[in-house]
Amino acid sequence: MKGKLYIVGVGPGSPEMRTIRAVQAIKESNVIVAYTTYADLVKDLTDGKEVITARMKEEIYRARTALEKAMEGNVVSLISSGDPQVYGMAGITLEMMYKNKIQVDFEVIPGVTAGLAAASRLGSPLSMDFASISLSDLLVPAEDILFRVRKAAEADFVIVLYNPINKPLLEKAMKIISEYRKPETPVGIVKGAYRESEEVFTTTLSNWREYEDKINMITTVVVGNSRSYLWGNRILTPRGYERKYSLDVNT
Amino acid sequence: MKGKLYIVGVGPGSPEMRTIRAVQAIKESNVIVAYTTYADLVKDLTDGKEVITARMKEEIYRARTALEKAMEGNVVSLISSGDPQVYGMAGITLEMMYKNKIQVDFEVIPGVTAGLAAASRLGSPLSMDFASISLSDLLVPAEDILFRVRKAAEADFVIVLYNPINKPLLEKAMKIISEYRKPETPVGIVKGAYRESEEVFTTTLSNWREYEDKINMITTVVVGNSRSYLWGNRILTPRGYERKYSLDVNT
Image 1 (cartoon, each protein chain N blue to C red):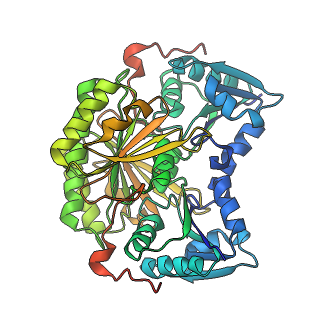
Image 2: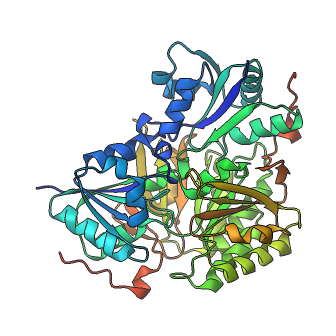
Image 3: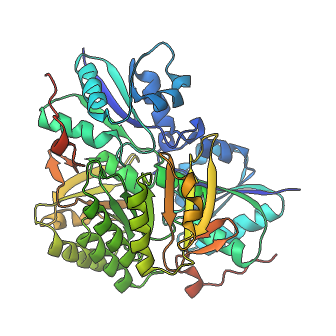
């Protein structure tokens, strides 16, 4: 019996934001391993399958279970929201395979990560080079995180902040960014992109605290670069076309 | 007649890597505007529609045409490969709307950007904070690009390089990164991820030039961080679980 492990990114949360490959892989699987919330997000696809759920901070358990089930010969989908690499299940699972010399066929199926999903609701803040940073200090020392925030600010990257629920660390990160960028730099706060509960806010570096209560586990924060600007409730980051070309349209 | 503009990310190139929303939007449209190659990539969906194609470096023309068609009352899909924000069509099109005060309903549909697609073929290099940088100096001064490369290297970001076709600039970028990272730092070179012509190579910072001839318009280069390692032809970037947890599996 030859098992197979799909490490599947199912996107930000709505069925429409899944890739066709993700849907195929889940349908093909007889075992689904998922964090409880994500099991709910894919339950239209998992009828009649063995569904193993586990709560947050049980990534180790989920990765181990998915591997064991695949080694037993099952076709397993290990569900990650967004993209499975970006703060998801791919890294830990492949590390476990490497360290335990496990040989099981696997495929990492990429998905629309929260940063791309959130940014698409804001217009086009990510049209220039950007950095993706997680503010979770469970596995990474806070000082390392803040060092990267500083370098990203210095480099004028658009900055996408995942896991901003750690308020003291978010506060420090925004303060560091403010050393390098103007108070009117646009900030986008997107809660539950593409879920029914979706809320989108645009503000500025000097005013982001007004929306502090909107920041929870499923919020993504996008900070513009030095050239980003607000257009109503949208954020645009110019790439430089206007230096070379006319952008006129006959209206 | 009320027009609508979809700025659609169709992912890296294979139909399976599209989101369901992207397929819906294209099906709903009566006009498709696309770079010639991408028009081919979606031609299974565009039968019977008006398809307007234009070559590279005609982004201005494509954005303007899509807007004009939408203002005439059409439902238009402006096709971008990958994600439309990330070096794609969303930025320029929304800038054009802003500058010309155009009011047309629009939706930016995110997609699996080349960096995520390429990285998924490499295992899981993007499991820690990363920076996305385009090496195209058509719109951005080369010195700005290299400054960001330096800061990203200093910050220990995993680095995703888009548009590495500019060889002298790629050479300079890799040299800068080598000042901060060991010669054995893993480098992934992915050509045409998810297309029939896909080729995946893993090498190191000291040896990447061996694959220089694989680098073209549809190549993405991923450089690991200081903790990334090679596992056969895969690249893993540990997030830090092994500091806190046992990764043992009963094999």
